[in-house]
Image 1 (cartoon, rainbow, N blue to C red):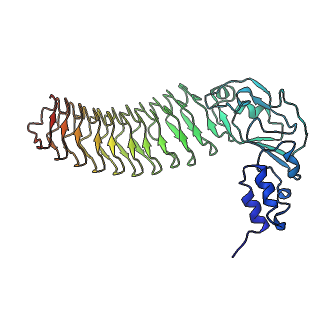
Image 2 (image 1 turned 180 degrees about the horizontal axis):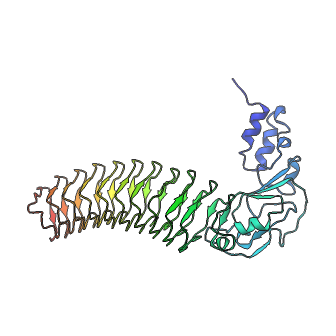
Image 3 (image 1 turned 90 degrees about the horizontal axis):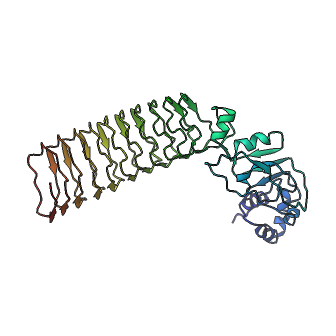
Length: 390
């Protein structure tokens, strides 16, 4: 039976959450004694009492503005002071992190590592100190002051950072950036090229809303959700590959992408929200993966060139206006997993000539097939108990 040696015990103890665990470990057996003395950085927040257990620390890590820094003060944005910093924060008021704090024990460290969120202005104000900031947001105010080139030490781009920046044509996001805030590039009508790092994990709502010159974008595979209106009204966007890591397409995500011809929806996607592809006039075909169980309100509304669609058997629910005004849609096969055809589902599908309704359907709601002039005949199974107007 193998046992943990001193080195492996130290590695394991890095994940302890409080000083009590460290103390108890050293009482387990003699070979674990002195474990805390091996640390050259603090694995947990310390105070003037617990600092004595880690006598050899050279690097101090701070996870909160309330963590004891032993007199190693530095300037921070006032919104960071109470750990309230958010991507939308754009205040440029600063004060010392130790303002109104009484330091009981002073210690000198080779380096201070700060993990709580700050804006880029905080980094600039402390550039001559031995402080390294690990969570840095580039705000709209920072952009006005420091320019549109995003510094390499930035890890997040704040809400509305480039909002309505009409002259911005191209942007390369540094590899350290993990998230882009809400409406970050909203209305950047000249933006035609954007390079996102492959390690990015979050794109905010309305992130590229109305970027009318953007013709293509590569979504990083680590992004799990495309949020509300993420790429809506990107009228030049013609092709898009959604990576396999994406599980959800948000409400109105591609609304008004009038040039979008094709889109590959991976099997990882389990939810397509309301009006997701509404107004994608050039979309000719779409394959709905079997991981999807419902098509929400207006999901493919006004997809004027959508000539055919295969609804997989995994879909159990169609919502209102699902395929309304799909002027080129000629035939539809409803899977046997569906029990109801909703309001205005195929409204104004002027080329629709064939619909196969399975015996699983028990109700057809009002206006389901209104303004479908080529639908000359329709076979309604005996299972249908409720039939709406039109």
